[in-house]
Length: 307
Image: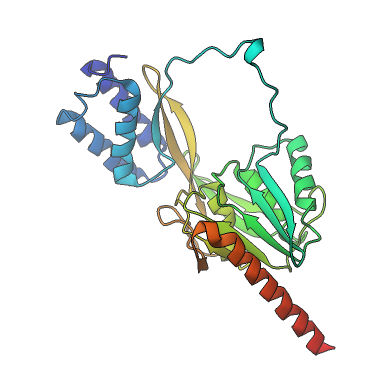
């Protein structure tokens, strides 16, 4: 696409406006975003942009300057390279379903790295049960979300279910702009494998790269006082998105739903999840491990005093 072509650019901006007006979760913010890019276009701010990917980046920047919504973005799906031939092919790594390393640290404290929440079928649910079962007998859990970029909300709920007992707990609601409905999310009464349960200490590690579904799990556990958050304030993306095709190879990711925590009645959009213990992300693991050991010692001493 010759991005200097005003007719094509106007068609693109009109398409963005239609999608935002129809679907963006905060209608008044959507109107302000539309006005902002129309004003920029009228001033000729896009005239000198000659490549489609750069135009997509600039439109994204201008839209986010109004909404501060990092789930919102304009993309250009340009020509793709052909897949590599048989000689260049490599066998795919075995799936880990978003899970990273799992290790047992001193004091029977488990460290579980969770980098994302994959969309799940029964096979995925069984696999997640296998991973979560590996930490079920630990005395404390360090749940590492420092590189977690999010994923499927249902999988977030599934993982959270292992951190409570079998009685369902209301952890989140989702309001949809498209339907006007609010859907409740509860932990599951039945899961594959073994639960860590609701009583043992949990420390959640965060960084400024923790985003979306990773933030949801941290925020909900914090709001329910089920975990202590250790690390950095997270990225600040609480809206859920849908992708909409536009003209000439462009598309837009439009947040069309928002999460509402039943305890706080709000979410972390734009602010991030603020940790209970603020430390640089590289120091979060050591800090949380020390806190877990201290808490376990305190509990043992408390139990001994009762006998």
